[in-house]
Length: 286
Image (tube, rainbow, N blue to C red; front, side):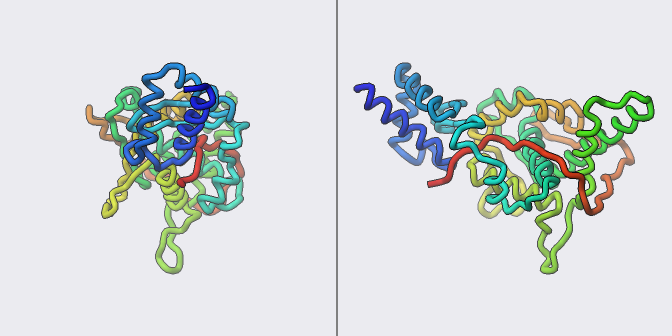
């Protein structure tokens, strides 16, 4: 093949990767391009070069995931927070941003709490909305206690103002309130986590069985590749370091670590404004 042909096929492979729910198993051409990527080193280099030209990083390529892409901040394919807010029907309040940001980090940490989970390609993580909410609220309680202890010792934490705004933004928001017709209010924390979960489903990162009413969501191989990158971020590590997520058996059953007799923080209305980043996600399903 000529360089022009290689470039065309490389762009075609990247185009497949921009359709989040499409997998090689559903498209023969996609499968062939994935196989060629692994068998033809020159073609793989062309794919990476074309992706780099679009300011996109190739995170991984396999028959299970297809090509997994992460657009850099300056890429035209990068999802801006305003785009995410529109797609998740999120209000423009800055406090909502931190809640959605915390939700995405907590979902990833709950799904893959151990390094071995991310290294094992056959591992499937599970999450529920209630678990995610409980983890974040417990993290907020721990952060609040640390801030108070530091203040009492006249040794305030360097990041205390940011931490204080973060736990207040979340813990002051009600966990679950009902609308007049009995539905979960979308501005409650569990309502917002539900939006984050639905967004991840649309991106091909989480799945739920069609008739499953348990509220359990399973991770996909593509999400595992994405979380491997997220695991390197400070927010992900700090959540795990708080000790609010513990693995209780070799299969990965999780507990929310809460002191004996400790109740869930009370939830009142209102929140402090705070900014939060969102994961890099790409594409529309075509």
